[in-house]
Image (cartoon, rainbow, N blue to C red; front, side):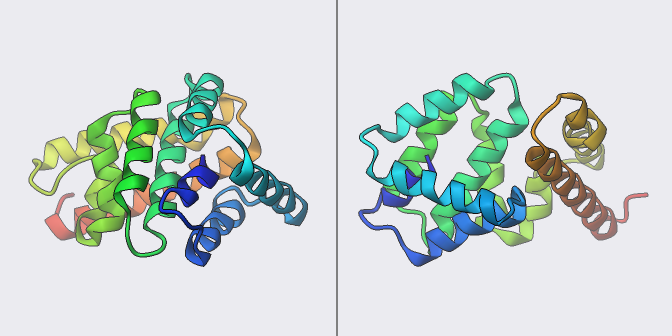
Length: 188
């Protein structure tokens, strides 16, 4: 999917490649051998005859019962699309296709986009809420996100180590967002 997304605007930019490599290294924490294998898969996919939607359906068929992985993929797609400073209409259309294929919440998709497009609201987007929500609603969102990404809960699902580490990072991100909002709003 990442290869087809990177090609959506007619060219694969250095920024998109750097974003994908960053995902492999920082989010998945692949070692050099793992990154090499992933880059080879990416290059093969660039020339593969399948369409983005084919890869999205294949991904969904493998991970449809793991919403955190589906969200991770949507998040990565957004990051790659905005890595060159601009999400094109073609890139957004492909991401919307994945959102639909994954039965992913449009509201959550908008929240993910706002993490990258409107940094001042990013803490709220991480928790899946809006700055206009009440303190109680924000607390509910925070608790829900903590429950979804709690490292022990993710580890119990038997997911690959890379995704467990991603969940740990996401959990820290949720904690940081909650701390920022608590401080900004004076919530105790």
